[in-house]
Length: 400
Image (cartoon, rainbow, N blue to C red; front, side, top):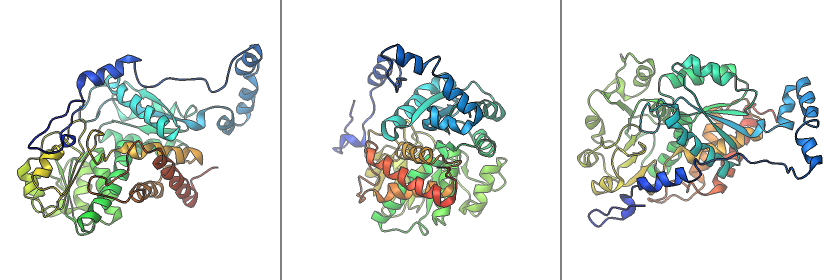
C-alpha cells in the first residue's frame, strides 16, 4: 500500500490503495469467490446419494411442498447479489461485466462475516422492468435478494416492485445498508461532539439512492435540519425528479436555495454520498465549531480526511478501509442477511433496519478515531443478526 504524508499528519489520513496491488489480487485466482461442496463424495455410495438415484428423493418431497426446498437445498442460505452496473461505486454506469468485481466482493464479505452464500448476478438490462422480470425468475433459487449499484430512480422502482411481488426479502444495500451504518456512526459522532441529532444542521451531498435513503433514515431518527444537495445545488420542491422533490418538501430545502458551498456554511455535519473532490478546505472552515465530516464517496472521497482535519473537522470518516472510521455498508449487510435468513423472513422491514443500526452504534464505546466498529470484527455481524432476528419476530415477518 502506498502512503502519502502531508504536513506531518498521520499517513493513514492520506493513504491510497496501490493500483498494481489491487489488480494483482483480483487476477491471482482470478476473482474473489468460489463454490465448494458441503458434503463429501468419497465412494460410490456417496455418489448415489449426492447424484442419481438418491437425489430424486428430495426432488419428490419439494415437488409436493415447495417450502421443503429450505430443508433439502441451500436456498435458505443463498443471496443473489444483483446489479445492472449502472451506478457502480463512484465510477458511474460502467456496465454489468465491470460491476462483477464489486458483486464478488459483496459475496466474499457475506461469507466471511455472516456465513451467507452470496452469488453475483450481473444483468445486461436497460430498464427497471427488465431487472424485475429477471429477478422474479430467480426467486425459487434464493433465500433473499441484495440489489446493488443500480442507478436512481430505476433502483427505487425495482425495489418497490420486487418487495411486492416476491415472498423473500429484497434489500437495496446502497440505500438501506448505507443508511443503517451512517445512522449509527453519526449518532456516535454527535455524542462525542456534544451535539444533538435534532438540532444539528446536516448537509447531505448526493440525492441518489444512498443520499435519499440516509436522509429519510435520519428524519425518522429525529433529525429536523437536513439540507439535501445534488450537483445543481440545494434540492428544489419543483424538481422534475419526484423522489428529489419529495425529499425537498420534507427538509430545509423547502426554505433554502443555493450551492453546496452555501449549504455548508454553519453546518454541523457534512455527509457526502456524491463525487470526489467537491469539498474544499475553505468549505469545511465555514462550518460550525467541531464539525463532523463524512466524505463517503467511493473510491475517492469528497475531501481527504487529512485535508478536512487541517480545516478544523472534529471527526472525519470515509467509506474506505484504508482510513480511520470506515462508514461503509459492509458493516451491516452480512449481519442483516444472516438474521433475515435465520428466521426465513419475508421482508427486511424498518424495525429490522433500526435494530441493525442500534447494534452497530452500541457495539463499541466510541472515540474520535473509532465511531463505528472494525469491519473485520465477526462478532459484530452476529450481534446484528441477533438484533435483526428479534425485530423480525416482533414485527411478525419471521416464518421460523
